Image 1 (cartoon, rainbow, N blue to C red):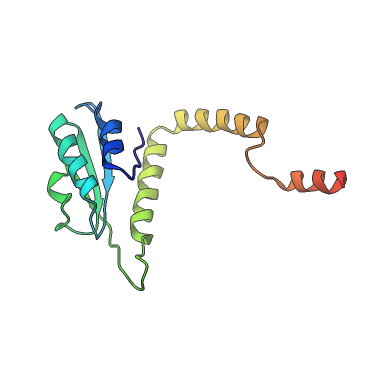
Image 2 (cartoon, rainbow, N blue to C red):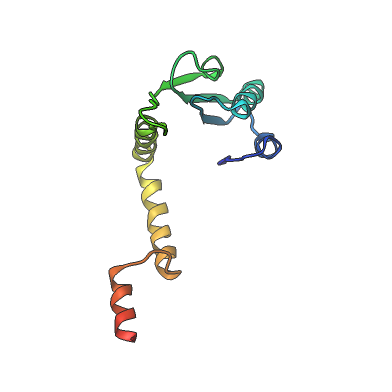
Amino acid sequence: MLVNSARASDLFEQIYKITADDVCIAMTFPRYSKQTVGALRYIRETGAKIISITDSKMSPIAPLADHLLIAQSSMVSFVDSLVAPLSLINALIAACARSRSEMVADHLKTLEKVWEEYHVYQTSHDDEEEEAAR
């Protein structure tokens, strides 16, 4: 389940079925989201495992985590840099995909067929066809 919500009520409507068999990956960075902290407190009560990605051991989600992953998020200008957290997430995705490589390959083959059939992505061949039609 992917949860991405701007309203607290939506967030809890999406996570209320989480059980001890589930794993939650949560992340928050300064200024820490109260919704994320509250949701993790709820998830902790269900017995689900929590993997937290945040900027320090002092983060309010750190004590709620079964596994804490620290990724610096430095503010070098008026915009936070999320390079380190995104690199960490990329590494997690790659590790999960590698651990289930056969299943992932099957899913990607199926998706490629669907994408091609429904013209989801632009290709250079599409450009040639459009020019020929003119």
